[in-house]
Each structure stands twice: as structure tokens, then as C-alpha cells.
Image 1: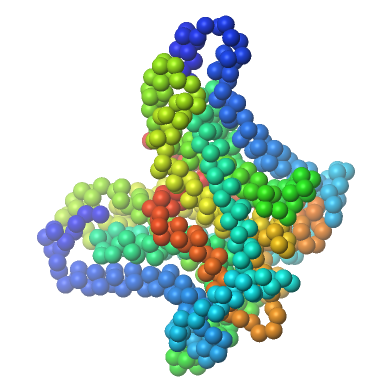
Image 2: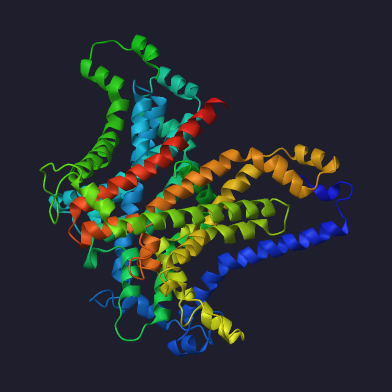
Length: 295
Length: 306
């Protein structure tokens, strides 16, 4: 916005009061967003006595990593007491191939739909785009049946398939909208020089694509890592991704409720996407605004 | 594509190579398109068909009319779920938009540490609703959470039992969902505010308009498209909410905070009422479409009119 302070009357006492109010507002809401993270973090460092005797905001006496160790390798999820470790690796094994494959397919499809437009290309794009909008409840039942039929029920490859398929509309949307803005003349010139479909993609489009590749990978990574619905619908027991395991851990009641372990487990589950957000926040925001224009 | 040019430069001697050259784009699109046709359209048709059968534990395929829909709309749980969706959706959308817009305007006043504040407002969007639910369940815990904190500060009569109060549980979902999503609305508004011509603001200010008047009368009306997109995006999120309910309230106490997505899951995977689950899924699809189609329509119109 305009720099009002440099204009006449910009430094009146009213304005100072206004600035004070402004910072008060900004900081109070900053507290609303950041305090839950601080509470969760500090709870995860406390032992149970400290939790019972203190309050949410009281700080732990020492940084005690016992709950983290317990959540990672000992906590009971349902009947098996393995901690989050195996489920965390399930999520890793599920997320990496699903992100890579859906991104590659999305890039190629977006390229073919914009730079080698065939008749009906726009219609094909509109039909793919529709997949961004559906509530997934409407595909859960047939998907469960199909996974069973393919022998992929309750397996990580099964979840990889699911996430590729329902991530595709988004990756196609991202790449298509990005490639639309690259001038067609580049491709025309290359075609006259005799370059084919894949040569043009490899030599011309791909070197221009790093920003959209990063946005897409981050978007897909957060979506797939954070998924709960598909994990909960298609897996049980040892095949669960970490979000489902976290929910089961929190709801498994054996003896005393260990809030500190719940909180450590929540942070372990949140760590990968939070790390991505901290390291690549700029691209994350860009993906959100691009990806959200469709919801 | 540039067919007219390649046509002339290519001798038509090798039919296969020719054909490939002409159709490679279609071949590349084909796998993706086939996957979408089967897994999106085919599956919707499948669910749609099952919703017209008497399927219980396993799908049966004998057509049975609208029996499941009649049953669905006679169930009090479904009515609770739809009412909850209205209450939750209405409050969630309203608060997230007001808050997001307010924070964006505040951040747009050349404040210090803007980057840091923005990061703090937006980080909840990076984490799963399951984690948000787990965290807020602990914070709102009637014994050890906020209530205890206020007691220790000397406000002994403070009582906060919304999580276990069937009249109030739905509002805990609003608190957590606003926490997670309002930063995102803020980002949308901030991006739009950065595009507003600062000369207009300066001119209005020199004419003696107060800052609040400038925003209310001049700037916010130009942000109409952002209000619209935020509304549709949040509405879409509200209809799909499932994980947050599971993690925070579990739909309870009783069924008091259940939502349509949880109802569908419960019927399909827990109670062996596949036909009923399919019918509720189709109702959800209809709800989302009722929101999305006007949105797409307005987006496309907006683009045509520049």
C-alpha cells in the first residue's frame, strides 16, 4: 500500500495510536497461531507429573526426549506396540513414488495439451480438471473393491496408485497453466528445425520448468503426506500411513493416558511437511494459491 | 499445433513414423486420460449405481430405485450431519474470511517483520488436519487444558467443556478449522492487496478520506473476486471435512458433531450399509457441485470480461 507516513498529517498522535493498535492486533493473532505449536512442543518435553501439576503454558523443567523415543519406537498402535517408526516409513515409501510419478505424468500431459494441441484438447483438459473438485467419498467404495481385485488392498503400492490417480488432475492443472504462458513460437521454431515431441520437451520446456516443478512437488508432497481419508479407508494394521497410525495411537487407551507421547507423535508426523514449509515457504504459498483456484 | 508446417516438410513414405509424429501428443495424454475416465468418471457411475441398489455388506447390482435415498433422508443422524455442515460451514467460512481479510489489511500497512508474521499465520496450512485435531483436543481438554490454565490464574469459576458438551462440540471444530485455514485466506487477500494501485490510496488520503474509509469504500469492493474465491474454496473444504472431526471430536459426544463425510465412512466401512453410504456420497457430490459450478461459471465470466 501507499506510504502514508510521508504524506502531510501522516505523523499525528492519532496515527501513533493507530500503529500501536495495529501491532497489538498483529501480535495477538500471531499468538493464536503460534501458541498451539508451543504448547504441543512443550507438552512433548514434560513428564506426566509435570503435565498433571502444571498448566498448558508452564514450561518443562528440562528438555526430556523420553516421550519422543517412546512415540517413535514403543507406543502401542492398536495391538502392536512398535511406535510410529514403521508407519512413518510406510508414508515415506508411499509419498516419494506417488509424488514423482504424478509430477512426471502431469508435466507430459500438460505439455501435450498446450504445445501440441490436438482437436478436443481443451475438452480433455476440462474433463481431467473435474477430478480436482469431487469429494473423494464418491470413489471410496469402488476403489476399495478395485484394490481388493488387484490384490493391492492394504498395501503401500495400492496407496501409491490411489494418490497418483487423484493427484493427476492437480499436477496436470499446474503444468498446463504454466506451459500456456510459454510462447508457441519457441516450439514452432524447434519443429521447423526438425525436433520431435520429446526433444522439444527435454531441450526447451524442461529447462524452463524448475519453478513449476518445485511448486508441484511441494503441493503433492503435502497433500499425500497429510492424507488421512484414503489411508483410513484402504489400510489396516501394518499397512497404515503415519497419519492414520497417529490417530490410532492417540485413541489407543491402555492404562494411563500419556499426553506427552501423543504430542511427540503429532510432531513426528508433522515434521516432514513443516520442514518443507520452512525451507520452501515461498513455493508452498505459490502452490496454495495456484492449487486453490480450484479448491 | 504446428501441423501445417510439418505436413509440407515430411515425405509421406513411412506411414508408421508419420502416424506417430501426428499422434504422439494424443498418445502421451492417453494414459492420464484413461486413468481419469476410469477412476473418476467410472467410479462415480459405479457409486451412483450402487446407491440405487439394496447393497449391504457386499455390492449387489439389482436395481432398486430410490430406496436408499428415502432411507437416508429419514435418518436423524443424516439430518444431524447436514445441519452440522450448515452450522460449521457457515461459521467457518464467515470467520475465516473476516479474519483473513483483517489480517491481510493489517499486514499491508508497511509493518515490521512482515515476513515473519506471514510465516506464522500460514504454517498451520502445511500440517495435516489429524495433527490439528490432536493438538486442539489437548488444548481444549476439559480437565488439563485451557480450563486448568485459567483456574491457575485465579479465575476459579472458569469452565470450558465444549469438547464433551454435545451442544458445543461442533464449535470446537470451527475453532480448529479457522486456526488451520484463515492464514491461507490472508495470503489470498494479501496477494490481491499488493495489486491495488497505491496512487489511488494516496489521492484519496490527500482528499481527506480516513484510512478505514479508504479501505471500506474504495479498496475492499475491488477485492470482490477474492471474496468469491475464498468463499468457494472454504465451502468446498467444509463439505469435505472428515479428518478434523475424526481427530478432534470423533463425531461425538454421541453423534452430535458428525459431518456427512463421517456418516458416509461409518455406513460404508463400519456398518456394512454400502448402498446407504453410496447414497450419502452422491448427496455430497451434489452439494459440492452446487458450490463449484456457480464458481467456475463466475470465474470463466470474469476472465472473459477481463
